[in-house]
Image (tube, rainbow, N blue to C red; front, side, top):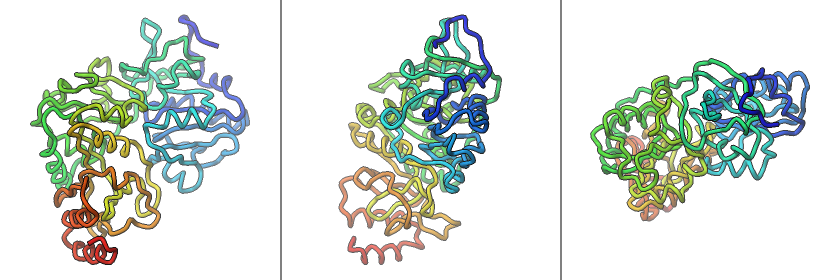
Length: 429
């Protein structure tokens, strides 16, 4: 039953009135999780209020007993991207992981679940009767007006604009909290990160539209772009580093073909500085992930530059970006989405970045073949440029032997002879 404009907040436990056996509940990622509401769902499961309910979510930030399979016959977590919280839970077999491209998650949810209820965090209702989903749009926005919403209104959630507005008539209930958002401070780049960033930045032309993630190399890249002009932003994740580029006048978006002048993103994660920047900022447009990450949309933006990290790459260019030492670490996310979009873009460029070694320099991240158990995130046919601190290997349009030689040339020097011998044994060179 829809709530009218005069509705009042209800206790979070009221969400249980809208949950039945076998339901599929959709929860936004990161700070989009309504903590008190999921607390209530977990308590309801512990009390035996329902059975066979599944919660579908990417990148959960809050650890909970149910994630570890303590009540999986009543409440089961289905992840679409592992986080530091859900990673050990998955390895314990406490939760499930669905392989996916981020752009396709809304469709997967529509086609493989009941889409019974969305529970989400939101900024307070405005005078027009609209809640804003704040830091999020992601895979829940496509369900606005189509699936019942139960909201946790957080007075510390920034109000953002775009297609993440939920009218009060579209919710079945809402509760109220005043809780700080989880903050993820920027990772301080190393000299290796800066070396990689400089190699990428000198290949990013003025006026390009960029996609960049979170982490030490992306943070170094944003520093390296400080003297560029008229960059645009179209990225799945917006983090702190971009604020400085906006303040310096580097990011203007004036040369973008799509949504000129707008910073386009589908979710945000960073520090309070970022959340304050987002609040009431009309330059930031929050759009659903099935638009932001759609390679067909990205490809319409000329001179699109995609920068993503990988953990391991083989000599023909296959990137294993979601496993570490052959074990699942995360998931595909949007890496392949943006790599393909950059490939379709006129004058577009895609960069895969990585340190040349791991384990304190004892292991080469460039390998003849991927570590057993590793999975391919971005296929060899899509990979464009690969960058380590030792240089840039161009992949697109290159033969197997050219690829192998190029990748060996940017591996750590101590591993080049070994890689050359392995490449010859495989018949690559």
